[in-house]
Image (cartoon, rainbow, N blue to C red):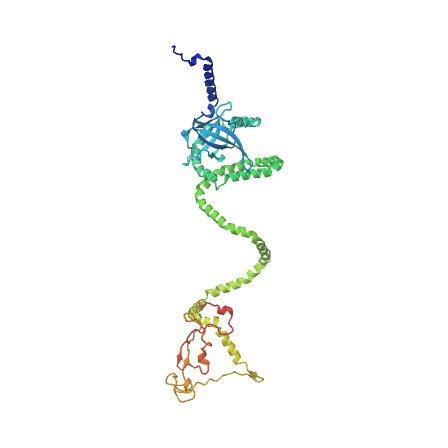
Length: 488
């Protein structure tokens, strides 16, 4: 029995050719897609928004510090809500750089003079990394400048102007090398002084961008009258011609003397700075008043209109005031006047405690007005012969030590008379009048308890001093202001 011979791959030319063709196709496929990254290799993918793609295409390199770390997978256009269009680049980076800081920036750079581009990725300093699939916003992308844009700046008018500048500046710098060296030597002190100025200009509070934008708006406003302004410069030739006649020595002397003046300003600047700061604070405080002045300006104008005639007649008043002022001066220098004023001050010090106690009797209880009313009422009866005073007789009860006769002590009842059972002293020599320190705050005169005045309800015991209880502050003919007056 014969052993069967094994078939070899090399024995089949068709199979060898097929395998060779497959290997060639795979090699070509890998070579073609090498710029887009090798298949089956994990990558770190995210997107970056660019203000302009600047001819950046799929397959361009992504570099960090000049080292290739990935490729651009695709570049697509995107329209924002405000109508602007930007480019969005999808990036595939090596896993070794994952993650990049979230505040990293991107810039499209030129790789060769033939127009080949690459994307420069500059890592930021943030401790937070960009997650896969995230997006670097447009604010973190710089605007690219291509070579053609740079060359387009040098149009024929610009080239002629550069040539003219070189010729003029060349003549200006000629034979002035020593002066230029001296200028360079003097620049460091100037730059040190200019540093805080530059910081102020770059501060957000300075808003230099807004100032430049305002200049642009102002230029746009005057653009329609550009020809008129050009004519103005033509007419200025006459003015400058006139100035040329006084250029020497007057204008030249002003320039020469201006240097010491500027040096004086530099020396005195630190001294003037506190004044300027105070002036700034003053202007800030003055702003509300100045804003209100717009509303009050008509009133101020009317006061000027009324005041001008008055001021015109003021000299006559001043002539009449002169003797009065002299008399006042003599009066003020008189020693007797000072003695009188000192006496008035002493009197005031004496009367102040008294008035403090007496004033509430009128301001609250209205007793002064009631007294005057009662006096007028007592003298009101009259006949054709004249007026008379009305009087009412009061007879006290009879008994031992009664108020109507001799007494050894105050009335305490007793006796055999019919009214002896009422013979008790009821007296309030120092009534409360709502004065400071009195408690309770009440108006006792005229507000005696009903038991003191009603027949049959007489208190059968002596009553000396303030009435029991609170009599209140209501008397007669009081105003609301009196009832609400606060004793001080």
